[in-house]
Image (cartoon, rainbow, N blue to C red; front, side, top):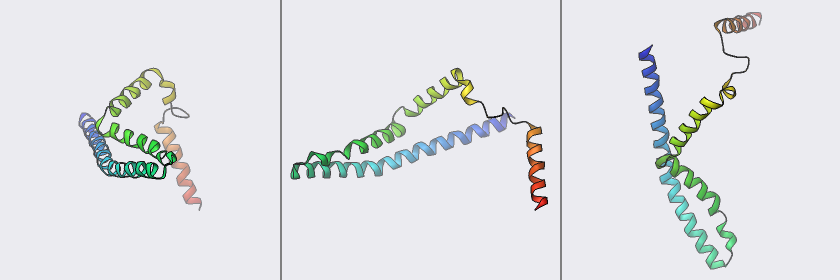
Length: 120
């Protein structure tokens, strides 16, 4: 049992590492796009004297900030803290519909499903 728990934790850590690595890689490409777009939109706004060209920078900056925070900031620590808070104070929101799954309920569903396939 302990080995299984250790293996599950190792898999979880690897998945988290992949998520962080993906976010950092995405940030490189999106950062380049954001930089080029910001410079181009600013130049267009100045040249055409239309400040409306600057509006797309606002949502793009939110995306950029989120990805930076996920890859290099403290977003994962804040998410972990919030998850711990939910586990401690909001346990009722984590309840499964109809309660916990039991062996009997699984067997009942399996039998009903096998009857369904046999009848067809």
